[in-house]
Amino acid sequence: MSRQEASHVVMLPSPGMGHLIPIVELAKLLVSHHRFLITFIIPSSSSPPPKAQEAFLQSLPEYFDYILLPPPLSDGSFDENGGPEAQICLTITHFLSLIRVALATLTKKVTLAAVVIDPFGIDIIDLAKGFDVLLYMHFGSAAINLLFTFHLPRLDEEVEGEYRYMQNPVILPGCVPLHGKDFADPFQQRSSETYKRFLDQCKRFNLVDGILVNSFIELEPGAIRALQDDDPRRPPVHPIGPIIQSVLNCEVDGSGYLNWLNNQPSGSVLYVSFGSGGTLSCDQFHELALGLEMSEQRFLWVVRTPNDKSSCPSYCNAQGEADPLEFLPDGFLERTEIRGLVVPSWVCQIQVLSHDSTGGFLMHCGWNSTLESIMHGVPLIAWPLYAEQRTNAVMLTEDLKVALRPKANGKGLLDRDEVSRVVKVLMEGEEGKRVRERAKELKDLANRALGEGGSSRKAMAQVAIKWRDQR
Ligand code: UDP
Ligand code: UDP
Image 1 (cartoon, rainbow, N blue to C red):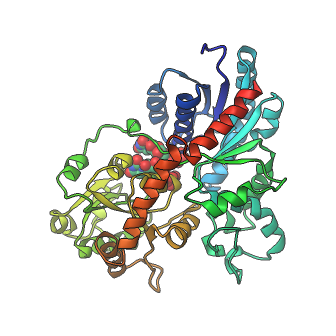
Image 2: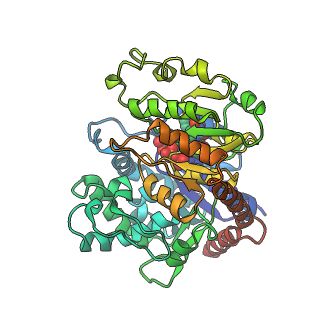
Image 3: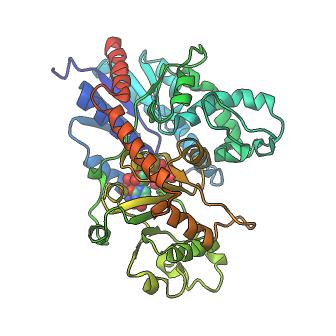
């Protein structure tokens, strides 16, 4: 097929590597199975540093084109205190005029079949309508969270006060009951600008022509069926996951953790990490360290400096802008040397999860990490921190039963005894056996969904046909 004959699709992630990587993985899938031509329009961001973005873009296969939009000037109009979600929304608004120019230039050269945005890019709706293309949304979280967003406007009308004070949980069709305290962060303070903005965004989700959700029917049958029922207020929803990042995105391992993993017995290592930015309080960090030590299990822990380091009690030895290792309890590294490895700040997670020595993952329930674990059959300990992670944790623990959830003590801490208990159960306890088996079952289901004739492969093919017909 020549370039002229191939259908052309624009992908427009919101700023940040966390949004760029999943949409690029989606594009790779589209190209490999359906031979689309893809152009990314990428708003460049200051975080992570443009260098990481640049390196990533340069490593893209040459069949991808991209247009990099310059970051907006810092004119004081950003709400520095607005939290990451508010920040992203504002940035997109700043980028709208540049996106219009980029789309206008592109449409002079090629006929576009579809534009794919992510939820933070919903402001692009009106703009895209002017170009007579299909507008699709890539929803990179669980289907239950998508279903929740469609339900939110009604909840907003029916419920008085903060959701966390509701007497009864919300029961979305086919889903595990959700208590208000488990809702995502933007829905925890209804008077906030972020909440209002999200509510407004959720109300406009139905204006797109279709939604690609990074989940699969076998994983979330209840939520996905509910999303696909005949509700005229909802666009078609296509479960096309799990789409996860490839090992190719990884930098070379400079700290030797892969070597270390190579020397551990099969399935013996608990991987401990809280996503790309998750951090703990000093007290919690300390309890986690001592709990890992008490468990006597092997572990690979990606450590970050605690988020309240200035109030760190005397047991933390760190001074100033410290190495995260300095916050570990006295003598911890020496005592755990035979079975633990602590790596500051970052590892290539996909390499760790796909390693034969990895047998469990203590994680923050970010959706990408969740799907990466499922694809590799790794059982979980759910330790949610922010965003929609509490909702994911409830689903993983109570519905999918692929995770164990440690319980906080009276002070809201997961103390060392509890950490040690749950780690032992996951890695070798009789009680954890079901969770370990469940992880293997989900791995099989995920691989089947993506394979020839699988549910997600078919869903993607249906979308491809629609886009092709659009030309
Ligand atoms: N990433 C990386 N190296 C780093 C930081 C980030 O490769 O030092 C990649 C990583 O692959 C991950 C993604 O960036 O999937 C996460 O970026 P992040 O969530 O920090 O981006 P944000 O959305 O917060 O801007
Ligand atoms: N990640 C990684 N190394 C780390 C921490 C995170 O490669 O040390 C990657 C991880 O594989 C995943 C992404 O960063 O692809 C984190 O995305 P997720 O949705 O789980 O959480 P978020 O960072 O958005 O909170």
